[in-house]
Structures are given as C-alpha cells and as structure tokens.
View (tube, rainbow, N blue to C red):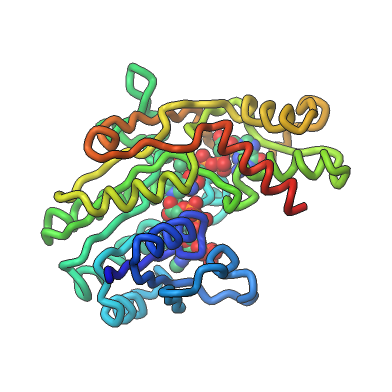
Length: 321
Ligand code: NAP
Ligand code: G4F
C-alpha cells in the first residue's frame, strides 16, 4: 500500500486529493493546524476516515514537520498548505510570505532530511504569471513570472526553491502550476462560491443584494476534482518536471455572475453592486492557461465544463441553504 502525506489536507484540494488517493488504495496522512474550533476544522474530510491519518502540524514548525515525515515515511508528499487568498495577502503580506514561501522551504528541508527518496509535489499557481501573457493570449510553462500580489510573489519563491532543491540535491520535486479551480468545497470568500452562495440567498429571499469587487477580470476556471487527478499524474511522472493545469477557456467575473443569476431566473444587474473593499491594490486582469504539455504527456483532460462546474455549485447551495 502506497503512503501519501498531504499538507493542507483540510482545504478544498486536500479533501478531493484525499478522496482520490484513498480510492486508488493509498494510505493517506496529513496535517492540520491547531484551531480554537476543532469541530469545523476537518469538515471537508470528516466523511472519509478509513486509511486516513491526520495529526497536528504547521508549515512554520520545521521540527514538527521533520518528525511527522520521519514517522510516516511517505512515498509521495503533496505540499498544498498555504494562505491561499490573494486579496487577503495584501492585509497579511508577511504571514503570507512566511507560510507560502518559507513554509515551502521548511517542508522541503524536512523532506530532504526525512525521506529524500520520496516524491514531492508543490502547489504552484497561475497567480505567479501576474501581468505576463504570451502573444497568443495564453500562459504556459515558458511564460515569464511577473507577479502582482504578495501571494503571487510568495508562490514564485516556492516554485524556484523547488527547482533549486531538485537540481542541487537530486530530489524528485515537481511543480503543478494550477489555474483557478473551484467546487462546492471552495472557500465562500473566493469569487465563484461567493457569487453562487449570494445569488442563492437572494433567490430564497434571505439576502437583498451582493457586493463584489472588480467584475472585469478574466479567469480560467476548472473543477478541483479534475485538477487533483493531474497532481497525481505530475508527481508520478518518470522525471521531475513542471506542468500547467488549465482548461484553456477564460470567462470574466461578470459573465460568470450573469450565468449564475440567470440559472436562478434572476438579473444580476438588479442585485450586484461594487464595494471598493473587495478591490485589490493591483489586479491580475487576465488568465488563460495552455495545458498542452500536460495533455500530450499524460492521458488528462478535464471532465467538467465551466457550466457544469457552476451548475454543481448552484445545486449544492440550493440544497444546503
Ligand atoms: P485552501 O482551501 O485555502 O486550503 C489551504 C489549506 O492550507 C487549509 O487547509 C489551511 O488550513 C492550510 N494551511 C494554511 N496555512 C497553513 C500552515 N501554516 N500550516 C499548515 N497548513 C496550513 O486552498 P486550496 O484551494 O485547496 O488550494 C490548495 C493549494 O493550491 C494552495 O497552496 C493554493 O495556494 C494552491 N492553488 C490553488 C488554486 C485554486 O484555484 N484553488 C490554484 C493554484 C494554486 P486552515 O483551514 O487551518 O487555514
Ligand atoms: O476567486 P478569487 O479570489 O481568486 P484569485 O484571486 O484568482 O486566486 C485564486 O486563484 C489563484 C490561481 O490563479 C490561486 F493561486 C489562489 O490561491 C486562489 O485560489 O478572485 C478571482 C477574481 C479576481 O480578479 C478578483 O478581483 O474575482 C475578482 N473578484 C471580484 N469581486 C472578487 C470579488 N474576488 C473575491 N475573492 N471576492 C470578491 O468579492
């Protein structure tokens, strides 16, 4: 039985990856941070318990990381933990850099000392591209990084230190450069889930309006369920390499909002207004990923279309509320 170790196991991707690996017969281990309300902390993974082992740990606590890796002795390590909210990274830039940049260095050091023969996956992000777009309107593995947020800068450090450790210490350490991916398990302060939840609340008469930030940015949105399968393929490639994971389609926040409200029989223009609090000091305006390298190397293609993704999220909130 193969063993996987996941940081960020209680997050959106951590929970789908856990389900996927358990389905493949893995024994899955992970760490969660100490939290004052432990009841909610593992809500995304509470329903899967067999062959799942969760302990306390933090990316900022390097001795704890090394101890747990030595004990588990995993075959695959997935570093998914992060302060993952881009706008909030402007409020807490140092914490974001400590967790996402130095935290990655911490887990890499622990990995190098405890289980250097294992494989290491880093959750890199399309936010690293920032304002850079190739002439054909896509971002890909060769597009330069021009990050436009503390979050993006922290992820560039993490990406580079993974490369450095791969080459310097001959580690099997890889980057998946994932474009935005969503699901009903997405935090409700990210735009897709915020819009769906807000629209459903309005539909059910439980809210009167919805406040958003910039509706004119474009994102390449896929489903987390499809993307965790790509993570597993990338880490298990015969050689350590980096891959973009994306749908290749892009939609504006406005178009996404219009679709969600229309599906509920509503006109978004009657309910949505702009609140400057949700704007960012610098905005990443356009993302569209070219994942041909991934698709030609592996048998991977996303199963969910953009509309199926949004429909699943609408259905989830219609039932939940
Ligand atoms: P998420 O739902 O925010 O999950 C992040 C997880 O990291 C949470 O379980 C969080 O725990 C944990 N965490 C935060 N700080 C930690 C620390 N210091 N030590 C240990 N754990 C810590 O994010 P996600 O959407 O699943 O994304 C997974 C990873 O992919 C992240 O690294 C993200 O930056 C990256 N990524 C995401 C996307 C996307 O569109 N979703 C795209 C590209 C890259 P708490 O609940 O205790 O905070
Ligand atoms: O949903 P978002 O907060 O995601 P963002 O900033 O693109 O970051 C996500 O994707 C990255 C990959 O590219 C990940 F690395 C990162 O961890 C995270 O998962 O915002 C999407 C767009 C932005 O342009 C934002 O300005 O939606 C716009 N937006 C408009 N109104 C809003 C809102 N975003 C949020 N969160 N809340 C709003 O009210």
